[in-house]
Image (cartoon, rainbow, N blue to C red; front, side, top):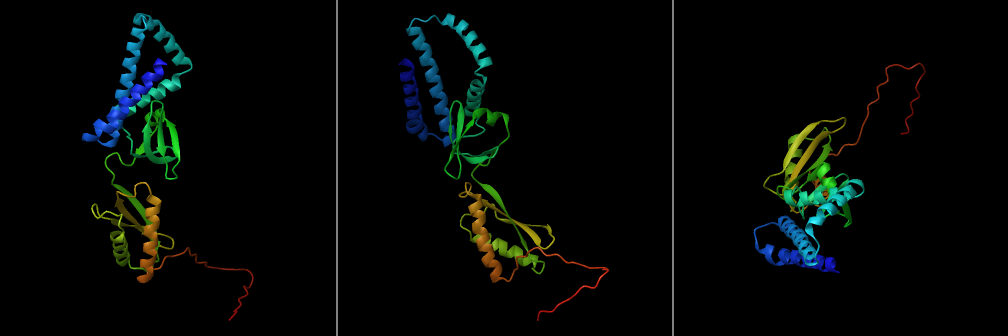
Length: 259
């Protein structure tokens, strides 16, 4: 009963700090969440110590209990302890924060909660993936928004060898400038990547703030605009072609003309 009340009280403290106090500070959403969560842990810990003393428990006897608990952790609870310590590290060091766009393993989404044992990530399908905190400490994690919300995406494409590369570059820049979610600063960039088997290959680099969660949708919209612009400017989109050269054959080759 006491532990339930203590947990409820620490949760009330966390919500009070998060929604009443920290929102008035200059801290961002991730920092506010981390600070409130750490304070809640400390309130729970100190409340537990006070409750044990009030119940007449000799604190020195907890040393023996702590040793037994350490053995138990070593044998059966090491994963839980590892994830809990990793959660504390995440909140203190803040390599990821609530609201960040991250990629860990094959999971890509927004951090919506950092709990004691696990971190919740919401994907574009509105599915919450619950990932152990230790994976963020032991594995490589890509944080798309660690510095700011500006992210660069690449849109690769190829055009026919009949096309003028200068005109293609101008069309790509014109389409990028017309898209409302593409930033003008930093400005888009066109890179001529080389000569393919049947196409001139380009990559359009664009920066965005509003489409960080939906890069494929942004690329799709740009492709629609490019297809229309290419038709207006007479730029062909190639398809794979192969030339067959016959040097010598041992039998006659019949040739028919259907026309």
